[in-house]
Length: 492
Image 1 (cartoon, rainbow, N blue to C red):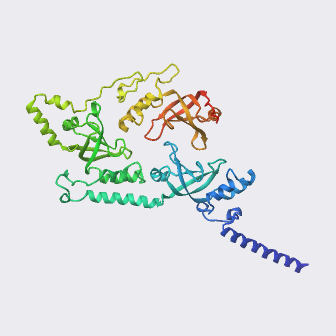
Image 2 (image 1 turned 60 degrees about the vertical axis):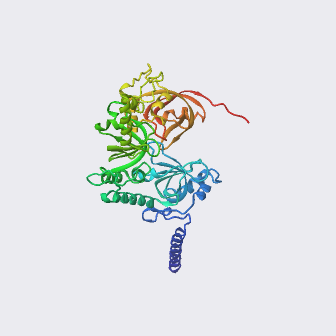
Image 3 (image 1 turned 120 degrees about the horizontal axis):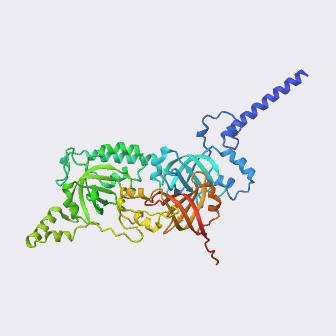
């Protein structure tokens, strides 16, 4: 009996060893038998990648899977918390400062994967555009049951259109270093028309600086600020188009210059240069010089101080003065002759809509209804803050203070609506073209929101919290739907 018992124990020990070794081999070969299924130590689980493709995982867990719900749950447990490396197309980016860290990825139809980025990836996200082909990594965290199938946390972008993110950053850093070196070239290497400064003139192009410091740069804001310290005070000579001129008061000596789209540079003239400001008109092509001053880093890149104008069109300032003097010698109406070419301060005409093309903050009078809403239509507000208004971003920011946190009642057409686990209950509304308003609701309004459909017309209310940008819509919080006109269904 003793020998038989010992034999059984010996055979059991051998079988246990074989089972343990087999488990290790299977896990190493990438089968579904993973270490953490048996609670064996695996090192840092946050770095564990699985090699399964999106298509394969979609076939297992997606809309067309033949598995039951319980089988899907069992399969999902094998992959949840693991990292993947996939390639897809950027379908959207987060639409506001609250959800900047969300990017939607398309693999087949619509958005299939939602990437969630940490704070340190802000610079990388800025350089990504809709339609880019990206290779990305992330941790599988949530499973949905629609086209949007997975959410990945701790996301990272490895390549953008075949170029690694590290290479893009290195190229921008290299451009910054080269531009800085060129700014320190001695005056002997600069042409005779260059502006001289105590430190020598910087040979810097607008495009070069815009790549480094503009809104599409992937350099972090902290790094931009460090680099800008080396550029501030350097002199430039650029050529651009007059986009606007100061409207009055303290703005008389401010001129906006267009290099690409919108206003990209703001010139700030000294008081003694008033005559130069009076000579230029909107859409004039001018050659100007000045000293790099304040960095904005948006579409409006920077401000320039100590400004001088060398040319208006193809004529130098000296030639323009000589022509004016010749007119003065033959006719005493010199001032009248000049006035014909000068941009006069625009006359502000208050239309019934209360939305003039340009308006001063202290001239805005906002009236409210008895129920607390301001008397202002979407079109009236958009004439002030929309894309067609040529005011600077800073001017619009100042005016927005009058409207921020005010309640409005508008009528629009539903473009989209839904509830995100992070973004909450939201609706996209069209007034002119595309999504003009993003309306945010409290969770208790979910039933009212989800019973609406695309193309329905609604009367809604909300509190203005964010003005529209060049691409992003107005954002309204505390949304409420007062009336719904259902879209008429079309039949073939």
